[in-house]
Amino acid sequence: MAIVAVVLAARVEARWFAGDEVYCGRELCQGVRVLGLGCTVRIAAAYQVTAGSCRRWEARGLIHKVLRPGQWMRMQTRHGTKGTREYDWAWLDVRPDDAPAENGNAVGAGAGMNVLVARRHRYTG
Image 1 (cartoon, one colour):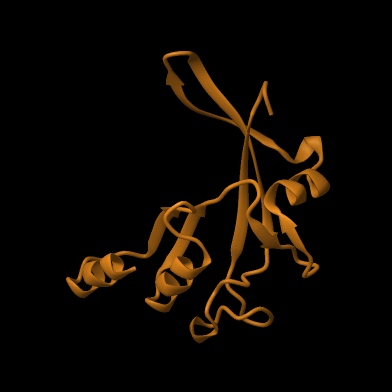
Image 2 (image 1 turned 45 degrees about the vertical axis):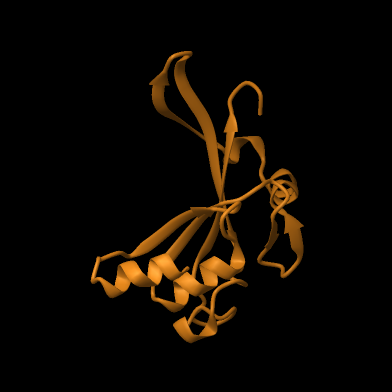
């Protein structure tokens, strides 16, 4: 978090921050949002998210519960050493329960936007 603050203090322009759950999580995203940046984080399948119904789910559980086969979109990423890389992608709106209220991201009216983006391999799931 300190590094992000130093970079912004040096007047480096940024609108969002990207990270990995291994190095961050809710606390880092909250801190980054307090600084006025958006946040995107790679999470584990067991990460807890809150659905629109206010129910807490593991990310994988929410994906398997609400997504039907036709809701996945196939997109090619890049050609790799093992051939074309095609993945199925889907996203679900989740409640921004980790966003600080001082940025107008409180749950309810004026809430920020949190999205769970899921990627699965077209053959192995």
